[in-house]
Image 1 (cartoon, rainbow, N blue to C red):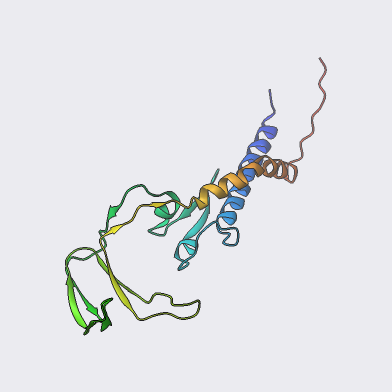
Image 2: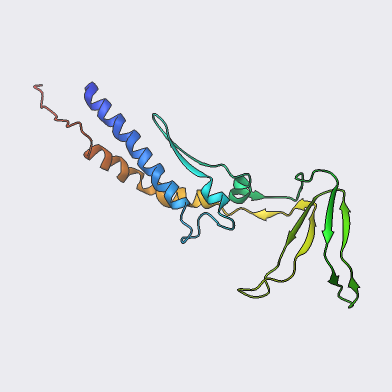
Length: 178
């Protein structure tokens, strides 16, 4: 039978080791240099949090698109971000055939109107253009959190051992008489 103080020390070391490993996994997933969490606007990276619980640790990415970035989309998904009818200003532009189209308003029934300036070069952007999104295209997941777990989970035994050896409880085994 294992003495209760030894059981408590082992349990505390296991919990502390798991929490330390969760900390490692979270900081690895936040690594942008190692190509883990992708950063376009920074919203996904800043939504990451590490929550310590009594006997565990939880890693959470709360950005609305976190699950899509992690796991991807197998098929196209209709866009439900539109608010019904939207009025969009289309600026003056030139068509491919050379015809000039004056600026005008267009009413969009479905989808979401997105206006942006495409890059011309590394430092320059072109004129604003508007596109209507009707669905999210299928995409492969980046699996940044899964890759971080696979990279750091191998350190779990070391984290537990370190927690056990640096714990405040000193355990001495006494040799009993048989």
